[in-house]
Length: 125
Image (cartoon, rainbow, N blue to C red; front, side, top):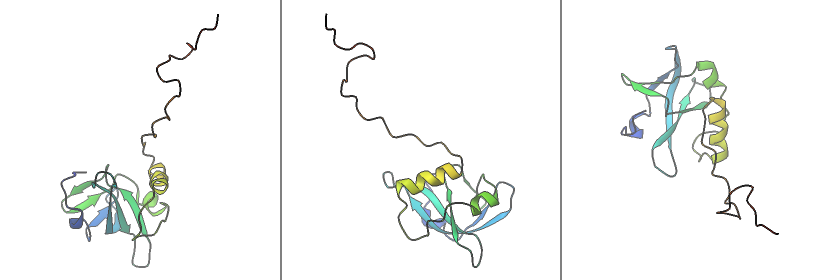
């Protein structure tokens, strides 16, 4: 999705799945903690329904509506973390896995033997 879109302009827009079926209306937009870029949208899936989080990165804003590249059923089955609260990194990871999206693994911890090639320990002869 374009990153130059003001997230406040997304609130109140309709969201549709990849087949053009209406999912609901965007209630809130969540920004990435590090970059401030819109990352998630909370979509109200019905009058008495809960909000479902969808990732904004593979989604598109088309003709004033959010087009989500997932089926409506998958969106409605997303983990429910409630709205109005911060999403933890663990919750975001659960959501990415739910949608089958790859996320970069955290970098491995530094090796204490940094600089030594694997299999080339100190030579005791």
